[in-house]
Image (cartoon, rainbow, N blue to C red; front, side, top):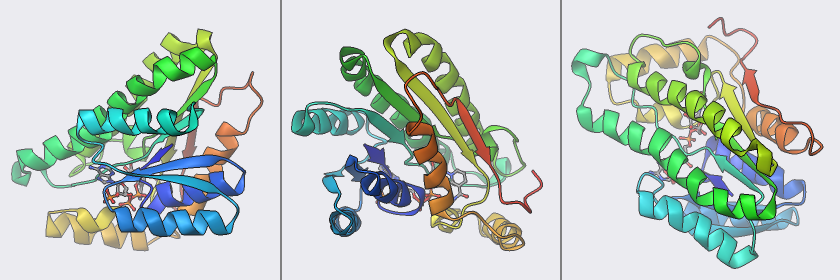
Length: 239
Ligand code: NDP
């Protein structure tokens, strides 16, 4: 299952997994985008399950796991990718934007992971892939709460790994630098949006497919290899 599969990294990851032969449940809020992706997956011989859901709502984050297992009987890999980046200086930020990021980037990821665990423990096999960011390593001005969510993803993932490794469940954190996607379009503060756009355009950004390839690498290793982290930046990104 891939959350946030209606665009960007999630969409590219679902396609890459389909090409590799996986059945992929694809979750996000925009159903028509998921259905279009499902058709593209079918063209490469893949099978999909469209799950329209708001992952920031705990009951929906749980329901997508239940529906996947209900349809296919198991859940091998969950890619917790759905995320929002509502950057702003702290002084000008809206608490509501902070809450939206916390609810999706952190709580949604945690709830979906917890829902997946009983199935993975039963299978004695599973892989949780959590999408963090270079913002989970370096806290920049105007990115305080976004960075806090991504630092949180790193902490959660490490504790998770230590709780589940005995059941043969692997945990991978992916930390991309700048990727050319829709993510920055939602930045509410105009000055911050302009600044980050200029910064991103100053380099040759990663493409979603580059991140998908890193995820595919992590989930394709033999069972005794647990790729804990992949940090990948554009070559010309300094921090
Ligand atoms: P996009 O904006 O292209 O994709 C975000 C995805 O999340 C969309 O599919 C969106 O679908 C989904 N989403 C947003 N809100 C919700 C919600 N409430 N419930 C379910 N799905 C939701 O951005 P990216 O592909 O760049 O982002 C994917 C992940 O990668 C994020 O976690 C982001 O933080 C991380 N990342 C991105 C980087 C970048 O530079 N782009 C760098 C480092 C990390 P919909 O609107 O249909 O619900």
